[in-house]
Image (cartoon, rainbow, N blue to C red; front, side, top):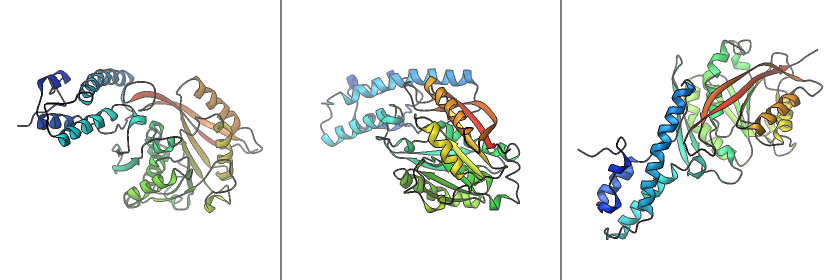
Length: 344
């Protein structure tokens, strides 16, 4: 029976001082591959903290073990191709434990199980380089997607009635990898338009096509287009008329100094003037700077001839795998709010 390495201490892995065979090394390393994280919001804070501490401890031990392989000449293994294979596997395992920014392209499977008709979305995330933050699926996107079912009978019940969904126009701003918008189309059985910057669109369109059949089977539909906040040129023609969308979704759209002005402007330009139209926005509260940006955003939303008022707001705790922590996932509080037209 093949040995299982996932559930034993790294001290019991094949060690370089033992001069293990190529086959033993490779078998161990293959089992040390880890799948990309997904996050569930229902776990108690204490459980999340305990899981983080246990994972971090094991993570440091495994990283030390992998480093001992990468830095060793493996002189007892005579075949150079076998040496390269071991170093390559060890390096891949290391990159998987260096946080999302250090990883290459990954594919995550996002389950939506706690509903009458369960489904799963498959989302590709290319490697993150330069300004391509839209290539990461942020934890707030999944957290917000998990709220969508409750909004059908709650805050958006006046819009998401069975007889009205076919004519609804729904837009996601800053879609990134598309998880939130694709989930909305599936859960709400409606057409959702996803949008982002030109350099993000190829991967976004890829994910749309990967999930199109599943979404259409559930009664939804998907389309997409370039939409650059604050720009009057280069945008898809479907956004040129303005004020067309009954619902606008935004997850993690306020993280830069210019976003508190740009995002409200984009929402005002695209949200329908009808009194029953709504914008739902979620922002992770990562630090004091983010708190300041959220307050500026709230202020900007209400600062216009047709202000957008906060109809309700909440705080939820989710998870993400981005930050200075050496853990692969960490708890993050997210502020979210529903805005509507404040008519005289």
